[in-house]
View: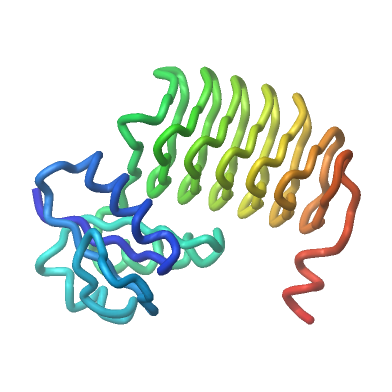
Amino acid sequence: MGGLLVLVEDALIKAAVETASAVRPGVKIAVLAETCGEEKLPAPVLGGFACAKECRDAFDSAAVALNNGALRLHWMNRLQCMGYIIVSLIHPLAAVSANAAIGEGTFVHLGAVVGAGSSVGRGCMLCPGCVVSCGCAVRDGANLCCGAHVDSGCSIGYRASVGAGAVIAAGVCVGDDAVVCPGTVVIKDVGDAMIVAGSPACVTGNAAFDCVR
């Protein structure tokens, strides 16, 4: 098996490489990062993202750990075009049901839980301690931050972000590109690109408008 190249943001290097090392023990792992503020890193940094093409001969597989779901999917597609195999990385200390489905390029970090009958799409990020209960659908590019809890029967939209410690009540749908702020309690559906905060959740903005502005 060839080496594993991880494209990663500075803040995610340690968690991403720890998960990669736990899943692929003994495999050569290296990092591409645009900036690097860590004094001591768990894997060598070979350069910025633009170095991915020249690294192809030494690495046959890749993973992308970026907080922005759209950017994560973009880089996954670019790496595939370069000939990399995009891998999903499920930490051995995560609890993923045998009856759950995990898409390619998805990170499932230490302590994350995915219940029976749930599907997690392509290029998702399930951070430490987050919970996806039974019968949920998490779409491509979604982020579930540390300690987020998604109750049974929920749908999390494409590229949506659920903040740390947020709770999504059973059966709730969170729309595409929506942002659920940390600690929010969501008890009713959230529309596409809506930003919600509070307990219970209230709309505080529009992610699409804020990006354009």
